[in-house]
Length: 104
View: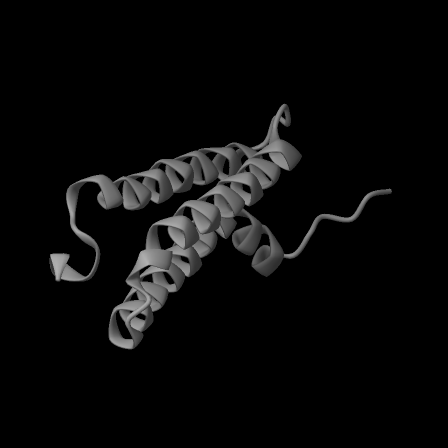
């Protein structure tokens, strides 16, 4: 007899993509603010690309664990992780449009 996971664990798993996206968002913007303040703004693009790559890989691992299952929670896990990947890539593409540290 298999035991159903608790409501809290199921909810956490379903929204792990959003939690990952929020951590990525806070991390890259906090690093950018610190880099601009301390004068090492040349490191910002590389750090953002690496952080985005790692976060996307983690989101894909989250989605892979829930792939090909038949219940609603797993479908939501994959869907939210996919939306998180799009959001994180959109954040990374800001490097192409906005100058780092206001173009000083």
